[in-house]
Image (tube, rainbow, N blue to C red; front, side, top):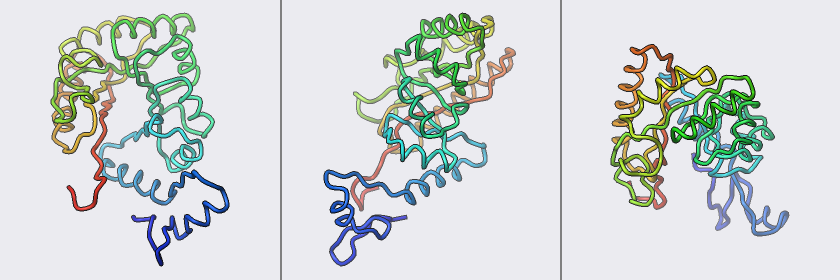
Amino acid sequence: MDTFRTVNSHLSCESVPLADLAAEYGTPLYVYSKAKLVSEFQAVREAFAAVDPVICYSVKANGNLSLLKVLSEAGCNFDVVSGGELYRVQQAGGDTGKVCFAGVGKTDKEIRFALEAGILMFNVESEPELDAISAVAGEMGVVAPVALRLNPDIDAKTHAKTTTGKKGNKFGVDIERGGELADKVLADPHLELRGIHMHLGSPINTTEPYEKAAEKAVGVVRELREKGHQTNWINLGGGFGLNYQQGQA
């Protein structure tokens, strides 16, 4: 769906001339197409319909409240990396029960806020973070839902500065430690293991790295279930490449 078009030498968005918008609202001006936004979200949801997906928009990409409200009304859910982003989701009417809280350096205050909001799960980056979440949940007398971010050691063939899924990258824990940390969660009355999280970096221009990550994630979940863990979620992350220039694949 191409909602930005040039008609009679004038660029328009959904048939509204941008010059008219600039004259009314002034410049600089950001203009978004609601139709395009909803169409792209629906395309992603339909592509994964067979697995009943929870599609989470990354709020750090654009936290505009109007944009978040449009996505929320379309049925989209959200990925946040701070208490401020979670607050914006609330203000936009988003379902906090389907929010994934990612990111490193979560503070106790943010953890408490997220637990009060009833988020779907925390993507846990490290064992110390797991301990911090457990401590806050214990103080509150609740059970914190977590997903372990495992480093699958997969080369996503992207820029060295933006890869996040290879052994040695600073994010997540080595996949070999997944079982150990899962057992720690199982033994903790204030933690619930909901899933496995993997993030490969960005931009990723082929589906192959995702396929490899999915295979590894399924293998980990299968092993965890055999050990008695009730693990139902696989959260795959990474920035899929965008074609900025027509004619390039």
